[in-house]
Length: 121
Image 1: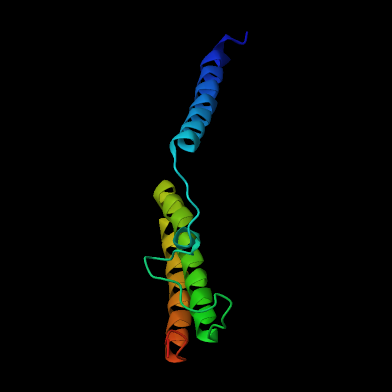
Image 2: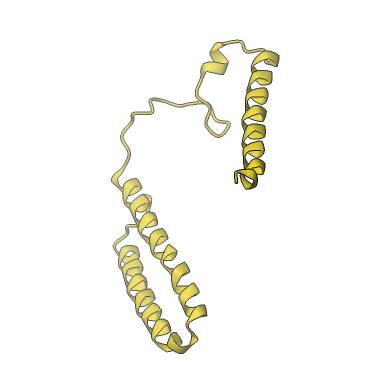
């Protein structure tokens, strides 16, 4: 009765044993010395400049929010493409709905662009 689960249990045991062996080997074979250079924060190969708690311009947050909004809108196109492919009899309706959606999205993008929301200065 439990025979179909034997490969799953063997795989699970192998994965856990492999993780334990790899972590143990890396801990035993590594030479870790806490030097001031190793304790510094590392960001893109550049040394840290100033305090990380500095104030950012509102433009930074505005561009970040616009990116998230437009990125999420693009994610809505994937289910639409699947429905468009699977429902050829409704393709006219689906195409017109997506064109209206893209039109509204384009108007919002042009509005943000004209208002200077995408300018860094």
